Length: 179
Ligand code: FES
Image 1 (spheres, rainbow, N blue to C red):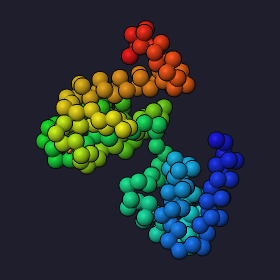
Image 2: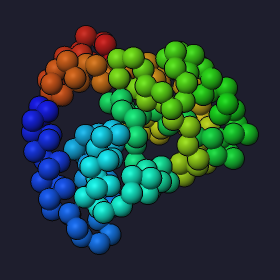
Image 3: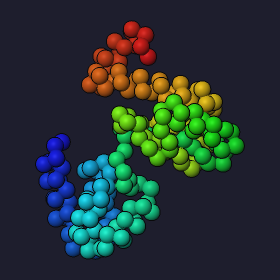
């Protein structure tokens, strides 16, 4: 979608909710669905359409973890730092992943492939320590296994993306022994 189409969709969203009570959250959700995150100028226009001060809109966007104020990479690595994972070595796992990618939690890789986050319990304590990559859970990790999982995930996605997500590409890659 080009910039013009994004702007059109955003304007439709603003028009739809303008002046409606309680519009702030649906507006924030809609804007994030369009842009992938909430840039400052988008926040200003959302606040205006919702009839709220910008500080209030920013306060809500910061409070709810579903909202992102910074661009987000295509894939997300969530390192669990809940209690069970913490006592099973989550800190070392995070450090090793961050070292491998050359970024810290909260940052994106320069190619916008991965964003790394530290999160609270992801609900899989029996497999602690756990790392989620997008919606896949990797459990009972060591730092080495965690880095191997990150590398394997990337390799698999790159094959998929190069083949336009086609099953044929995956099969071909698998036959070549790339996976
Ligand atoms: S503490 Fe990590 S999954 Fe529960």
